[in-house]
Amino acid sequence: MKEYFDIQLGKRARLVLPSEVMAETIAVERGAICPIPGITDAYLGVLYRRGQLLWVLDLAEFLSASMGLKLPPLPEGGLTMSDRLTLVVLTEPSSGNNSGKNSGKDSEKKTTDSSARKEASQQSQIICAVSAVRGIVSLHPGSFEPLPPKAKRVVGGYFSGLAEIQERGEDKTTAIAAVLNVAALFAGLETNGKA
Image 1 (cartoon, helix red, strand yellow):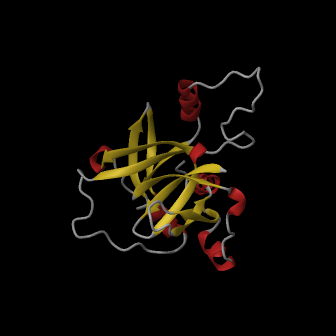
Image 2 (tube, rainbow, N blue to C red):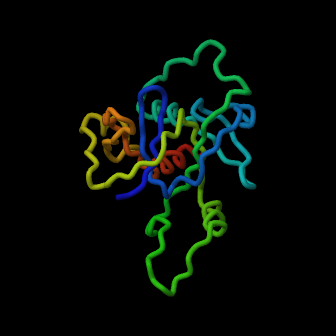
């Protein structure tokens, strides 16, 4: 089993992403994000966070645009500067690591929170605006269903499969969430020169 963050995008779309790529979740007022003129609508601007300027990506807009879809327009008036946004800070997965986990050798020194944060701040990071962080779910990666072939062609590698999530509550319903391929997301952003 592995822990994943359960993310809501819009009213219907749900994603899960591995917990090791999630640096933190924050809520900020829209006015704290500095807009940058002349860039695609998927980028809301930049946010100064822990000594760095980080891009803020509207994840739903970016994924929709990548798939050739157009999101419905915001209600009249759109976002105001005082609207609060839910943001997740993602750290680019490093290749060949143990997903940030200790290998279990007795001689190895355990990583402290502060050194882990320092290491994460030296890796590429991006902030993604999402509708909500629903919580943490434990899933078995081997149980993920592959994407249907037609869907795989449309989503361009941003999703690695589908996960079934057991909802909390008395009715015991299940929901389907797409598994976000965070490495592919960073690769796509680098192609656009933003990560």
